[in-house]
Amino acid sequence: MNKPISLRFFLVLLIFITKPLFATHYRAGEITYRQIGVYTFEISATTYTDPSNSSADRYEIEIVFGDGTSGYVQRSNGNGEMISSDIKNLIKKNIYTTNHTYPGTGQYIVSITDPNRFNNIRNINNGLSFNIPFYIESCIKITSLGINHSPVFIVPPVDIGNVNKIFKHSILTFDLEGAELSYSLVPPMMAAGINVPNYILPEASVTFQLNANGEIYWEHPIKNGIYNYCIKISEFRNGILIGYVIREEQIFIANGLTEINQVEGVNFELFAYPNPANDKLIVHYTLRQKENLNFDIFNMMGEKVNPETREIENAGKHEMLFDLSTFKSGMYFLELTTEGSKKQMKFTVIR
Image (cartoon, rainbow, N blue to C red):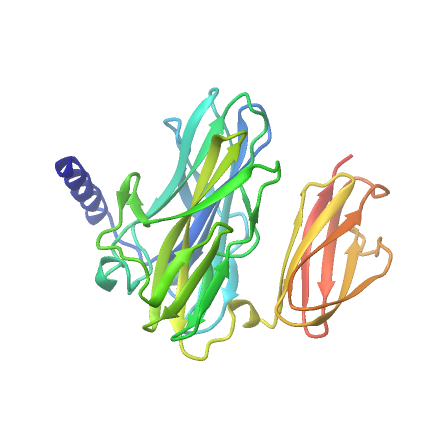
């Protein structure tokens, strides 16, 4: 049993050793999808990288579609989005989106691979992680059970914590079709079916675990540094597996850290679905402290098109429903403003 695995491991290493190595420093990522036709899917690979080496920036990546084909996909969010400007923990978000039509029903493994991870990941290869390939995959199953989208992720797969303090991180997922989601910890991979070498769970003084709701509970981180792990999110409909996403996450542990999304002065998370929308828009937002909120919706002309909506909310997760029944087809902007921050997102109404 060990010989084939060992051979495959060295073959993968040989492939990447003989290629030029670029310091992309992949930190984390996931592949999501939306079914937009009988056999057609919109596929998005979202990666989180260290942008300190601009010559290694990926303006396009290869996505393997799982049906014997692949394609190079250009980045769809411009030059990428900085989500952490902390010089010790620079993080850029990159999104690569394309449409792909499959030949028929079946199971397809969609994946991306890059030769270089972020270096000094403590729990991968004894910290020598730079030349260990980064690989993530998702499973698309086209069946007779109806339209199938992957889970939607509200928060990024990168976070920070402090030594000797309890760390909690929820991936905050939901399924647009109401499929049952289950969560499990799996090792990061370097190729299909091949785990990274010398992987261990992040060290804890008490425990490191994932609960049934998709929340990491780490009591307590022992040492400063970077730690990675993967969460497999499986979708079930009527007890039948209809797909999964393997998401790699990265946690930066140090002393006296502030939250990643506070670096730019933004004190909340914002997500809305469905998008495109029809008669309603459901807005999810997570506050880190008690806030006075103001919600506004603007059309493409910059005109406000919703009644004044003001709320006072405590820290935590919240949800709000907007009635779009009187909205015309087109693009709109949802803006959430607090006393010290503002965040805007686009959504589309289709009639």
